[in-house]
Length: 70
Image (cartoon, rainbow, N blue to C red; front, side):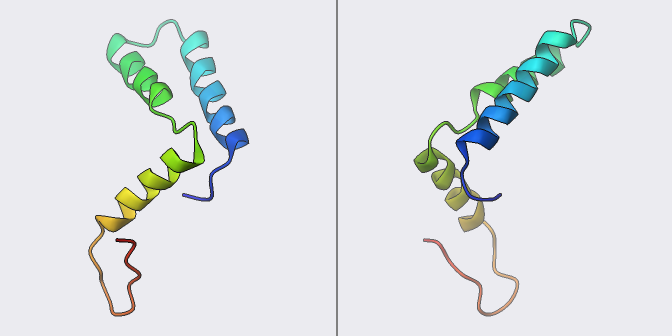
């Protein structure tokens, strides 16, 4: 995960939408997964950063000097 970028998020959304639009043969299960991914994309930097913090704060330290974000 890198820094938030509206351009990258827009590209991701466009790519997922293109996949959905150009693959009518995709089964309903996979279609629902991709629709969920599209719906759940972070639209703001605050939302993106909160998700990054949540993911990395759940990791357990493997060595000394581990940075904690809590």
